[in-house]
Image (cartoon, rainbow, N blue to C red; front, side, top):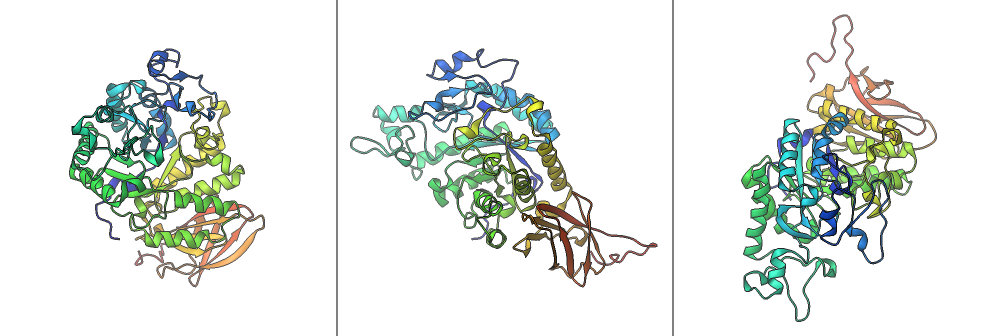
Length: 477
């Protein structure tokens, strides 16, 4: 399916940091105790920072709050700049009962628990002043049962009743959940309502929307929302939450590429011998792959440190995240080694005690972010699989000297092998240098001889040696 809308130009140069606002940082020097009234007046309970969240059988864990807010995120922009990210994606920030805010009460109110509209405006301004973008979470398939318009519909208001599906004794909820009544997306009044929400926050200055429950929205609503956003500006970004094979969904700028996650993690866990073939096929069949999100974990999955306990495996996954076509998305705290199982364990509070950080891992992230920003091939180059196992591929660039070759040898044994280099511009005798280790490899007759240590990886780039003023690439670019 042909991609329908222009991908924003800035997306190719972007590394995104995902934040679950309640768990990142409390701003203005406050503690959750200072904000107790904001939660308790809506039936919530507070918890001390650092106490791990636990699932409760009655679902009450969604009403446990730690106090993080938008003021706090704004105060940590320097941390994010130091890491190297240049965009933030926030899970929902609108008025809602729960800590996750996927049960919206009012889209036109930024939740006071997060600092309200004033805190959002402050965050947008501070991010833009630091050349960073902001992406908000749009939950448009369903609302919370306390939503202002749903409450009116329940009371019999004909004006709002057709926005929802009512049966004789109940109504339709997302996956049958009564706390999350679904909107009737085909209704003109619903489309107009969603359009007003989209534009309100675009006018405030946000840079894009992530669409919750993309499969429930369906192709037509994904297309409608993207069209409305692009009507505002072609430079605004729309990504849909889809846990599918990434092709087909070309009516949005990109999807959350969990397909990439599943392939990479299963490959490193020795359960997927054909990872290379699969991700190559996905690349070839997904027209908007460069705008899809390369996910390794999120608020809806186990954290990377939990599914890959081994440090080498974890680094290899991150390496692939930053070298495969797409936009890398770092889930807050993953860069310092925070672990956690499925929801809500993956929603721990951010650790701000540097003594408890995995600083080696964080430095590795910083190095890869730097390389991605510096190397054109990693941002918008093509993808050609050179070997399925060990996994070796080329990020092919318009300029031959920008080409990148990536390898991952997850085996214990050292491997020596020759791979074809499918680019007739690459000349015999050319030296490739590993940008991580500075090891050198050489091309002979369109092939590259690789020596790969056990449990190793590399990011190789051409080093064009000019000998006595002779440049063999003088007419080859």
